[in-house]
Amino acid sequence: MRRKHSWLVLAVYLLFTLAPIYWMLHMSLRSNLAITSTFAWIPESLSLANYATIFTDPAWYGGYVNSIIYVVLNTILSVAVALPAAYAFSRYSFIGDKHLFFWLLTNRMTPPAVFLLPFFQLYTAIGLMDTHLAVALAHMVFNVPLAVWILEGFMSAVPREIDETAYIDGYSFPRFFVRLFLPLIKAGIGVTAFFCFMFSWVELLLARTLTSVDAKPIAATMTRTVSAAGMDWGTLAAAGVLTIVPGALVIYFVRHYIAKGFAMGRV
Image (cartoon, rainbow, N blue to C red; front, side):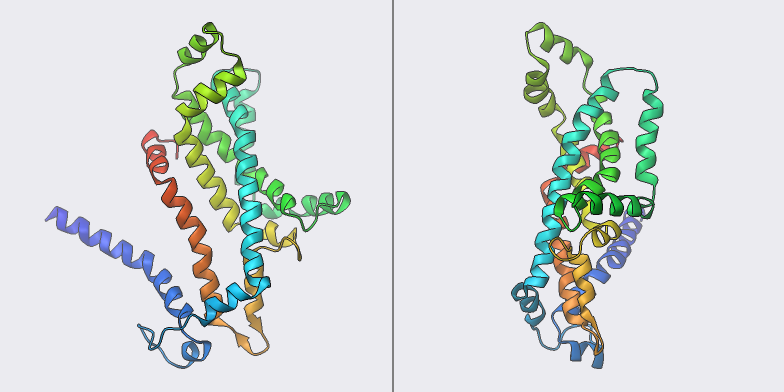
C-alpha cells in the first residue's frame, strides 16, 4: 500500500512538472491562428513552421549562438578560478578564511540588479559593452562563489595524505594538481560546471542590459514576438522548447556526477 502511494505521488509530481513543457511543445507545433482560435489537447495538424522561422532567421539563431558562447566561456572561467581558490580553503588555514568564505557566498545571495549599474558604467568606460566576455565576467560574480563552495566540499573529502605522498614522490604542485588531484574530484568539477552553466544560461537581467546587438542573448531576442499585431505564440513556444535543449544535454552528460554530488551532501 505504501509503495502504491509512492507511485501515485511520483505520478502527480511528474504530471505537474511535465505539463508546462508538453503544452509549450504542443503550441510550438501549431500555427498562431490555431493557438488563439481553438483549444485542443492534441494538435489537429503538426507544423514545423515555427522552428523553420527560428533556424532561418539570423536574429533568432544568432541569439542561441550568443548565449552558448558566453555561457560556455563563463563556465570555463568560473571553474578555472574556483579550483585554486577552493583548494586554498580546503587545505590551508589563514587569518579571516571563514569570513572570506562567507563573503564569497554573500555575492551569490545578492540580487543581480545590485551590480547592474557598476557593471554598465565600467564596461562602457573600457569598451566591453555588447561583448560575450562582458556577460561572462559579470556572471562570474555569482558563479565563482558557488563553484568555490561546491569544489571545497569535494576537495575536503580527499585525504591530505595524498598531497603529502605526492610531494615526497617528487611531484611539483602543478603536476600533482593536474595529474593526481583533479582526477580525484572530477565528479565535483562536473557538478560545478553544470551549475555554472545553468545559472548563466537562465540569467536575463545582466545579459540583456550589457548587450544590444552583437552579443544579444536568446532571452532578449524572444521579446521580438511582441508586436502591434499581438503575440506570436507559436514562434515563442518553439524558442522556449529550444532553450530547454542545451540544459537537458548538460544534465544528461553530467547526471552521474550530480547524483554523486547529492550523495556527498554538498549539492
